[in-house]
Length: 328
Image (cartoon, rainbow, N blue to C red; front, side, top):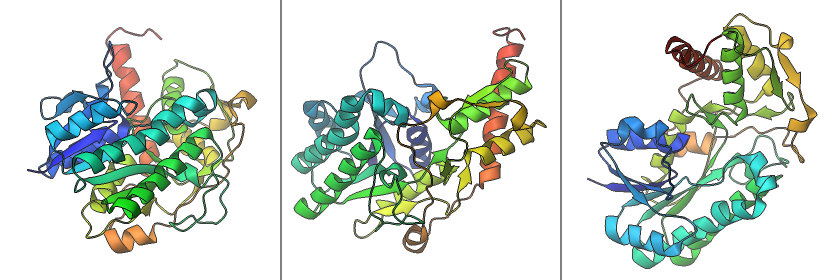
């Protein structure tokens, strides 16, 4: 039974990856930071099947101890300060976790067992002000946020350890991937949750920033399969993972509101305070390498994803109303 260590296991990707690895017969160890309260909502249904351990990407010693004790065959580094707007208000913290945290984990692997296979969660935000359309593995990076800059560091330090020390270390340059488990601060979930609340009479407007920003959105459950496939190859390589389609925030709103029989123009309010200081206007993947080398294809279309998220938020709010937690 192979063992996988996942940092960021309580997040969206961590929960889907855990489910997938359990199906593949893995023993899963999830690293979480010590806290007085725990947020295990996304993995609550998995807690009796996995091992949760305390560790911190700020603390080199804790990483060394975890690798020595649990002896993972694979490490998936999904932990990060991952919300782009927060990276402007907390740039140093973003750099410490999202950039230097990668170095600490790689150094721990090099010291404890260089045969451990390492996956780094890179991001399409590294392309930022895209210098090529669509974006592929060879497209130059032009990050437009502290988060994007930190991810570029994490990406290149992974390449550096691979080339300097012969580690099986890869980066998955994943484009936006969403699900009903996405955090409420992200625009897709903000829209699906807003639509549900408006449909149920719990709200009367939805405030958003730039409606013309375009992204390559896919289903997170599909993307964790690509992470695993990268670590099963004969040699380590980096891959762009996305759908190869791009959609605007406006299209997202049109589909989400339309799914419940509403017109988004009656409810969406553009708020300049929600615009980014430096906008990323267009991201679209060229996933041809992943399709050819990994045999990976997305299985959920953009309209299906939007409907899935709206339906999940509708059910969540209906359950709250039915339980008496909310009164309309």
